[in-house]
Structure formats: structure tokens, C-alpha cells
Image (cartoon, rainbow, N blue to C red; front, top):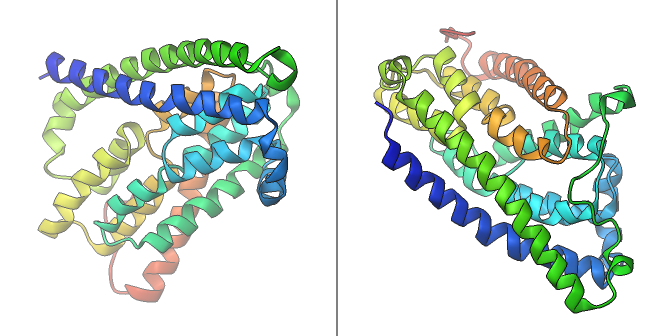
Length: 301
């Protein structure tokens, strides 16, 4: 049964998180750009941003996303005035490799090591960007709605920059809060449906993948943790599902946070799904042949 009170509570909690993260980090990013601080440390990030066809200034946003979450990443990236092509790259890369500290800890509870999780997600994130470079540029039109491409030239004073930065950060926060609230309502409704209620206590490979794909690692892995403790899923099942979900999870929420800025949703979702199917299949075959040659993978999609 859909719980409106719980959904509203989750929405408010998420809204507060967005406000606490986006506004101060957005202003910090604008301040760094205003004083041109990044030029002194850009050489440290140039190899990474070059591989991703992104400006050096995007490095702080990428680092924030990898270590913390997508809200922190967006707060640093929004002031840069990136175009739709660059936002699509970021949506794809950070969609795979974000919140590694928290989400890899969740996977650890399933028996998947931190090292494997980190190496898999970062390497696949880089590989996922390659197909985008081969696509026609016509697929990527438009630019960020909050473009502030050169704040050092745009503003006449530091005070003016701070005022405009706060307004832009507040506007961005409002857009993100509206989107996240809609997604929370949708996700909670899905969780309350009979089919989810029926199978959440008795997982199988296909259902677990679909759950994590739509609702995210936390919810999908939560089901798997209970089932692994009961012995209902083999280690190969856990390895397969975990690998798939680390590449493609919360695919609606993660993607549409970047669509706000012009990222191509179809490109991002297609590439993440394709990479998830290919690499989880390859890696589970290697894992099976090396460690569990006598274990048959059950319920594979």
C-alpha cells in the first residue's frame, strides 16, 4: 500500500540534502572560477579530463561525484556552462562511477570486495564514454540552462558574483528538488505495487536486477543481502547481479538529474545497459570458470 506520509518524509529529507549540498558547493565552484584558482592545479587533472573530452574545470565535479554523490558533482559542474555533449559524457561516466565509498560498502555486504567494485566501476565508466565520441554531433544540441562560462569576466565584483551564484544555486536546487520529489513518489509507488511486495522477500536473478536497475543499489542490494543470508542465491548469482547493478542502477533518477542540463537520456541509458549486459556476462563467465566450475548460474535473464 502506498504510504503518502513516508513518501513526503523522504521527499523533505532529500530536499534538505540537496539544499545542504548544492548551494554551498555551487558557490564554492563559482568562487574558484572567479579567482581562477583551478589554473594552479589543472595539470593534476588534465589526463582524466582529456580522456573524457571535458574541460579541466570539470575535474572537481567528477571527483565529488566519485567520492560523494551526484548532487555534489552537479553543484561543481553546473556553473561551468557545459554543452549537451559534455553533460551526456558526465551523465554516462558518473552514472556508473559515483558514491563509491557508500555504494561499494553496500556491495561488500554481498561479498564483493571494495577493490573489485572500485576498479570495475571506474574502468567501465571510462569505457562507456568511448561510444559517445563515435556518435554524430547532431544528437547533442543545446547547453546548460545555468551557463556561467566565465564568471571572472561576467561579474564586476566578488559581492555581485556571490549574489548571482546564490540565485543560480537556489534555482538549480529547486529544479533538482522537484525532479527528485517526482522520482521519489514514482519509486515509492513502484515499491508499493503487488508484484514488488510479492517478490521482495523471495528474490530471483531477474527480479533483483530489475529492482536495482529502477530503484538503485541500496534497495536492490537490500533484497539480495537477505536472500544471500538465507542461502537462496549462489555466489555466482550474487556476483552476476552485483556486477550488473554496479554498472546500471537507479537508471531513471541518475540519468534525469543530468537531463536537466541537456544530456541525451537515450544515449546514456542505452550505453549503461549495453555495458552492464556485456561486462557482467563476460566477468561472470570468467568467475564461474575460475572459481565455481561446478555451479550452474540460475535464473539468468
